[in-house]
Length: 211
Image 1: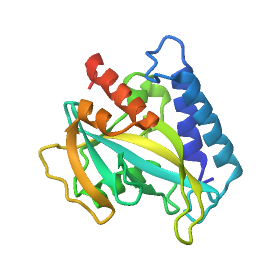
Image 2 (image 1 turned 90 degrees about the horizontal axis):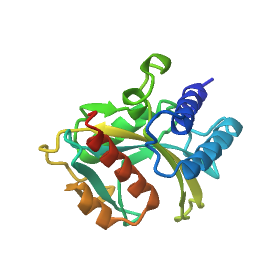
Image 3 (image 1 turned 120 degrees about the horizontal axis):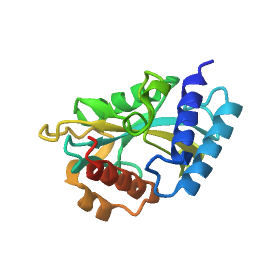
């Protein structure tokens, strides 16, 4: 079943944020539990969930690109939404969302990822986890109607991708601007709740010393 990997990843993530005895990297576990439940309901009921033609929503893959010292992030000023966001895009049928996120990093910035940082593996029980890279955040967000495209929901699977911040990014035609910036500066550029949640998690990882 082409949805098996993402369902398995979600179950590992859900068990992790609800686990007693582990540091709660979720700074709002009740909110994240609600998000995860909606993800599962959507995926289990929607066989074509990885196709952008799937309405009223579909799975996307994205990457919060971070410098090796976890001090800077690479954000794009989205060309259509006019918001500072992480890099990401449509799955277009690919059920391996980590591949989608890595592809989008290179296509939208020209930056070559070094590796995916996996909190579930760093802070969890590695022996119990699959070999494929695991996400560090999930969220869903509303996309307004545009031209012939109706409004819909993006169910976004997020990965924390480490890249060399000394490499100048190349702005694609999907972006108004693209830049590396310290996390405090990134916080000031967005009021998106889920973006701040990701920044909170990154700060936790850096302060834990387990990079």
